[in-house]
Each structure stands twice: as C-alpha cells, then as structure tokens.
Length: 583
Ligand code: GLU
Image (cartoon, rainbow, N blue to C red; front, top):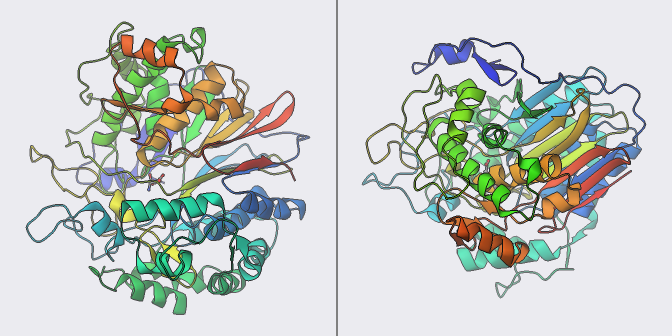
C-alpha cells in the first residue's frame, strides 16, 4: 500500500520511495482532534440507496431486500446504470469505491481506475508536429481507452464484503436489458446535447438515434440483448470472462479501429489489477472526513478546500450570506491551483499529500484570503515536501455518476464511477461503451516554461481523476454521511459545497445538494445563476467576484445519504433524475 494517512499527514512508503522523483517521507505528527471511525454497533436504521436513476436504485434495493450487502447492491446499481445511464458509467469504464465496514469500523478505498496501455507514451495526445490533438478527436480516437477497471474492482470488493453469490447481483440488470427499459428524458437530452457539441460516433448513432439521426425520444423502449449476454458471461464466469477471451478480444479490436487506432492489447487487459488503498482522511472541525487519494485529486481537492475554510467561522455565515460564499470561492481557487500542479498518479510521481493537507500550510493559504476583496491572482503554493512542477490545464466534460448505498447492517458504499465523457469514447462493444478515460491525462507533457507536467501520459499510468467519493464520521467516530458527485474537475467544488451546506450551514441533504453550484477553477467563476438569488450575486460582485454562465456550474449529480436523529435521509441532485429510496 503506497500511502498511509494519519490525521491528515501522509507517510510516503515503498512505491513512493522507489519513484525517481520521490521526496523524503514527512514525519507523522500525533493525531489532533480527529475521531477514529468506529464499528456501527447495533444498527437499527435500515438501508438506503441514492443514485442517478430510479431503475438503478430499484436494482440495488432488490439486492438489499434479498439480504445483500452494500457491495452486492453496488454491483446491481452499477450494472443497471451502465444500461439506463450509459452516458455516465459502465463496465467499460473505471471507478473508485470507498467502503465502511460497520462490523469492524474499517474504511478502505478500492481503486478501479483505468490504466494506460503499456505501449502508451507521453506523446499519446500530441500530433506529429507535437501539438495537442483537438479534444473530441482524442476522445473518439482509439487512443483514449484505458483498461476498464470497474468489473475487477467490484469483484475485489465483493470478495471481501459480498454476502450473496456474485452472479445474483447481475440479475436485475440482465432482466432490464433483456426486457427493455424506457429511455429517460435525461438520456434523450444528452444524446441531443452530444449532437450539438460534436458529431456522435457511429455506435451512439446506431444505438440511440433513429434512421434520420434523431435521438430516440424519451419513453422509447430500448432493449440491449448484447449487454444482457455480456453480463451473463461475467455473472457466470467472473471477471475473467471480461479481461480474457472473446469479450476482451472485442474490446481490443474496437480500440484498434480507425480513427487513430490505439495500442490497447490483450496483455494489457489480462494484466489489469484493481488496488485496495488506505483512504485519505482528515479532520474537518470536529468530524473525520475520508476520501479517495491519488490517482484521484478529488479527496485532496475537497479536503484542501475544507482545510482552508476551517480557518473561518463558516457557521456564522449561512447559505444566503455572500461572505461565506466569497470565502468558499477563494478557498477553491487556492485548492484547485495546487491540485492542478501537484496531483497525479503517485506510483509515477511523488505527490505531497501530507503537505497539501497540512493544517499549518492550509492556514498560510487561508491567510491569503481577504474578506473585502477577491485575490488578484492565485499561484500554486509550496506545500511541505513538494517538488516544483508545471501546472496543467486538463479538459473537462461531463460523464460520470455517483451513488451511495447503506445496507441494513450499516455498511456503506460511496462510489463514483465513469466512462469519462458522454458515452465515453462513443465506441461500443457487446452492448457497453468503452471509456475515453485517458483524455484525463494532460495532453501536453511540459508546460509553457518547459516544466514537466505531473499528469502527463505514460504506459501503465493512471490518468488523474477528480472523483471524490466521501464518507464522513461524526465527533464520536460514527458514520454520519456519504456523498459524491460527477462533474469532471468541478466535482471538487460540488462535493465541498454539499459538505459546507450540511456540516456548516446545517442544511438537509436535499437542500444542500440543491444549493447553487459555484465553481472557482479560475476567474471568472462559473455560477449556476438560476439557483442563486440576485442579492447573493450582487453581494459577491461587490467583493470583486466576476461570473460566467456554464463552465460546469450545472454539471453536478450529487447523491447523499446521511444518518440523522430521524434515521437515514437522502439527497438526490435536482439537476439529474436520481432518487434516494429505502428497501
Ligand atoms: N473522468 C473524470 C474524472 O475521473 C470524471 C468526469 C466527470 O465527472 O464527468 O475525474
């Protein structure tokens, strides 16, 4: 295991030390006030699932009712989402799962991120002249597919936490694919949206458009026998059916087709291994927050934002007070610039996790924030243990989905899962879409000053993610809530917003996820104007904030389950079509 984090400070172990760019480990400091996650004890609160599509929620609930664990239900939810929400995630993509075991109190992070083919180089997305390929050219090319990790990761988690037979949890999605499901308004909407952004790949056209190229309307019954067959093989034979044999051969063949064939090989698929990692955990005021470390920047980004905000009395400002939002915007800007600079696959580059989350360092970053004016410019800081790097400008498009499952024993899954862009690479194999996850790498390998970019592509490397599945424990160490969102690099802003809403502003999960999204990757800041009051916008403008529409402000899909004195309460982002339901 390559990182251990105790009370917000990381110990850089074996792989990190072996890296040519590794920095010496940072000494551990004693735990501050962070409670340790505790076993759940006698659980009397039942279960709940919050996910982006009601059919997928129902698939998971069927498994919970049959006595399945949160992980069993996650298999059902994922395989159903791959059918009813194929624009976002599926077995052709990758995932991160945070799991809390109510019996032992253990929190672990499963890493099912895609890896680049062994033959990939740092010129993966450069043309012959050394210029970055246009984004959509890269997405739809054969070069964008990493080895899909979702199936292997789910299997690893199931081996440790499954209660039902592996094959049982595939049955709801197999039935749904065979009998057919109604195309939802959102699926129709994204197919329409894709046509406006780029010429959809031929597989999207044949699967989701009619003979005139018009997206099939919402309410159309769609069957997917090929997907049912693929799932049946994986259900009966295990992950081997996916990573070796005819399914693997078809994945390799599709990726090897024009335009711009990739180098994905049968050996790459066979060699794929998911990881089980320590999550990164840090205190936020009295609570303990656990999230996903590298290759995701999500946990670091969320915790750095919160760690900066910890230096302000956020509770004294509420959701209508521009000052609280101003601080939130400024904290994001500081956290994002560090994330852009220092975070990548830590098996390849040393990531100063401890430094980035160090309370003293974040206090020094918070001191840059003025309560009366926005910062003129934002530069990366120098967190303890950091090596100077170039800042990259990785692109951002919205696929991805997040779901939360609490089972009837109190075990928790918080899982973000993705094919990257809408319908991934838009290349379909046996009823599922292949990811374009490798476009999460920086297309350039050095920045304008010639500094090497941490997140440049390399064979076997994982592209940096922003996915931020999160679990929060209360001041006594008991499970309190799980949250996460899709949204590309804006995920960090969305998840941090929901947490500030719930933890600092005492809002319900539903009200917190519905708060306006304000994404401060840079200036002007992206704002979801339809949900922000004119008074709030005016107040922020008076502090010097400038806004633009779009830029990801509407791309969230936050899903939450929180344990309250009234029992489990869910939140489903009104920007998507999800629900939170009990078995
Ligand atoms: N591929 C992105 C990531 O791993 C997620 C994309 C999205 O949320 O739409 O961070």
